[in-house]
Image 1 (cartoon, one colour):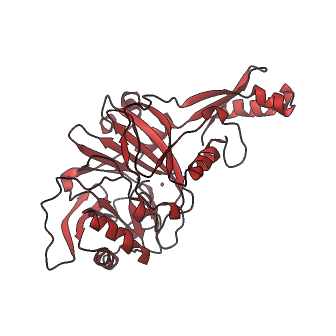
Image 2 (cartoon, one colour):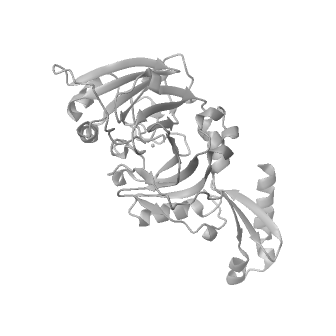
Image 3 (tube, helix red, strand yellow):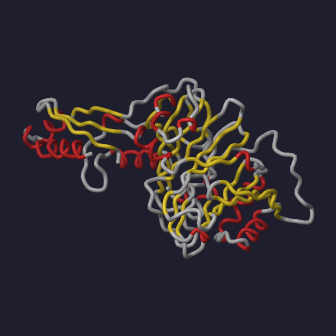
Amino acid sequence: MLPLLLALVTTPTASACGGLFCDAVTMEPVDQKAERILFQMNDDGTITTFVEISYVGLAEQFAWVLPIPHVIDADDVATTDASFFDSLESMTSPQFSFFDSSIQAQSSRGCGTFLSPQSSEDSDFDMDEDSDVNVVDEFSVGPFALQILRGNSGEALQTWLTDNGYDLPDAAEAPLQAYVDGGMAFMGVKLIPGEVEEGPIDTLAFTYTSGAPMIPLLLTGIAAVPDMPILTYVVADEPMQLGGGYANVDIDFDAVRPATGEFQTSYVPMVRSAVDAAGGRGFVLEWAGETDSLRDGIPERGDLVAGKWIGRFRTYMDPEEMIEDPVWVRDPDGPMQIDRLRSIDIADDSSRSGLAPFGLLPLLIGGLWWRRRA
């Protein structure tokens, strides 16, 4: 699943995904719908990143490392309920209602990581001249055992991580070096044996100083699966959009149609096609609203601050497309609200195809049954 932005490294006998980096050895996707991340831009100039983590295997075989803008400590890290992202999903995922105006019947169908650049005030920490990798801090939060690291080079970091239970492929050295050159620190994440069971675990949240949310896809890409889904929420004072080398992809939601097979509608294939047309580097803003409309629906309402804009961005990317880190920037003229429910008249489709109204009756009955069952 996104979380992220993050780079997850595992032993060959474990499958895990704590962000956008899945099993580095087998490169098998984990049993998750998408990589899910939330960036919350705080009033004090910090950003809090929420990351969903799921894994399969033994807790002692889970290990994950991600770049962070600067050194953080235990006070900057917290956990929240494992269902945090499922709750957001239930309130923000696009829904499509199809009807034929000549029949007066209707059916509903559903469609279906993050860091930031180096902070200008980071950091007073100095590397030990006698060490290529320094463990700046070690602490535990919830089920997680964390190590805050600094490295002089990507090569030194890769060697240290491998020696300490983070199983990285050789290709990790170049992206690690890119983040070292950017002045970033790193956070190693392991699970405390006996603290968790296999499957979804507490959502990890950490706060740092930075001006813009960013997903470190360079490191993610070395073990990403093809067509990886990435779902990102951004909370800010005003609308946000993709900056830099990423496109803000528009979708004609009214062109979505019912479908059969893997997807109930044509929406996901349309998103994939539109992102591919943007060179594989683009996100669709598929929903936007106010945090106030969501806070009562999540396990701990205080996780989302009140009175903010929140947008939901979706994309699908292949590993070879992860050559640049996406960054979100302010968009004062962007939409304050994008509804999740869209009602679409498909009467013209039936007339163009020569179908009589009764030709759509099985579809409509099936849609009504699905809606009642849900």
